[in-house]
Image (cartoon, rainbow, N blue to C red; front, side, top):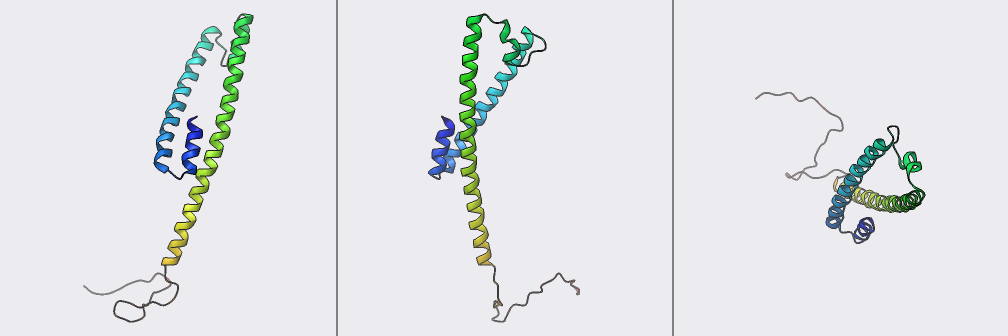
Length: 138
């Protein structure tokens, strides 16, 4: 839901709201990582070699096994949908970045003089094309 909202704000070109949602999404991702670590500890308590649900599901009753499998499949579908939405958001944000960078580069090229220009004294400015050593007295 947050990723879809982020996509909406990306389309509306509202970077402030996008940044706020990014913080929320990252916090939720952190919480999910903590929960997965806790689940691995629970799996290890059931069976020391277990790291995933598939390693311990055989210890559940038939009813619990079916329920756990259904929940696992639902979470997997949601995770895949989130991954697709995250990819879509990433592509849009990267496109905006590339577009902005190209605009800035264009403006910078337009600002740099390509021909001889006048100095403040009304003469042509002389610019050396290569680095040179300066010598003089103070």
